[in-house]
Length: 120
Image 1 (cartoon, rainbow, N blue to C red):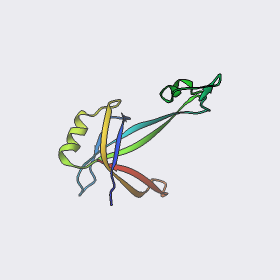
Image 2: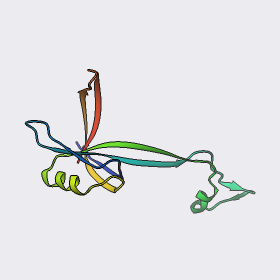
Image 3: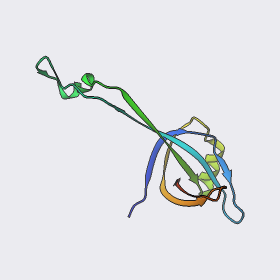
Image 4: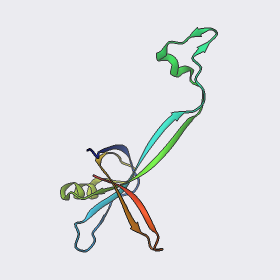
């Protein structure tokens, strides 16, 4: 089995370091990734001529749509955790590799919530 994720995006806020009593510290930050695509129909022919496939993108009609996804990144490894906390800043473009962790927690209103975290 494999649990691996690779992300390239922009850091959403300066990392923070947290430590719960009795546990190792963790550096946490958010990372935004973007997906872009065109909506609408593509026009492959014009005036009875078929366009060359490599030029097809020139004939594409439609609007560009974009989706931003925010990822919560947690760094536990001591050396990487400290370097991340010290040098990573909001707005930086960053490549992150890690694994996906699905967890649950209870918020301050006593509601059970699910959280997805990338463990780098």
